[in-house]
Image (tube, rainbow, N blue to C red; front, top):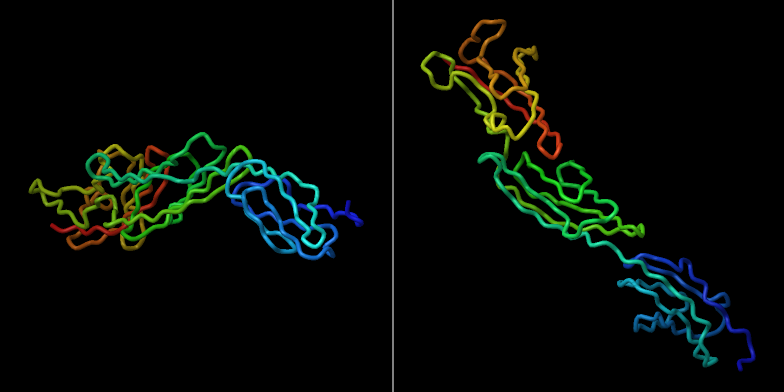
Amino acid sequence: EPDFEIPEVVLANASVCAGTEITAKLNNPEVGEIIWYTGDEQSINESDLQHTYMNAGTYELKAFLTEHGVFTKPVMVEVKPKPDASFTIRDNVERGMIPVSYISANVGGEKAYSWSLGDGTMLNAEGVSHTYRKAGDYEISLRVVNKYGCFWTNYQRVTIEKDFNLLAPNSFSPNGDGMNEDWIPVALTSGYYTFELKVYDRNSHLVFESNDPEVTFEGKVNGKLAPSGEVFIWKAITVDPNNVRQEYGGTVMIYH
């Protein structure tokens, strides 16, 4: 039997999530060299322990006092499982014209899913879909929280090759020849979106609005055809089948 009082392990948190660092020390550090045995086949030679358990389970943590040849009384560390935040990205072209990225968690049924799609869009669901307006590289992140309150975040990058602006023509010619007589962003005629479309003149006066794919802009202002060369500004707010709201816009010129 040792002729001194064996110190106790002081654990900052006896229940942690996998992947989270724990800290431990002895309530009497004046005992010389310490070797920590963490219960996951590791031994660590340091006075204050900092250790990360990567797998869920219950681990026996104790310290060996080398100068005295004794172990401390073990303490149990409960390590709760972290969720799987991996996800899959699948691209498709809806209605033959709308590029849609379908992004879904590889494991369902967790408590919460939080997406950041890299262009300012934030969504909460196991799976989401999104249309990127601008070509470029975007970092998508998924944060998953499970029933234990443990969370994990995963990241992937997606490359968008082309800009998408609702396939809106930049000009039309209401001159009675039967070609390009009216104007509407082509993607709004697909039935994929509900939308609100507005057209303004160069003085920002509203000259046309529609939420019906069959109601198109005919180039008229106050009932009269605008002069050739007139440029209008358009804005559209779309809502896709997943209730994702986006804003688009641009200019269109009329010529006779």
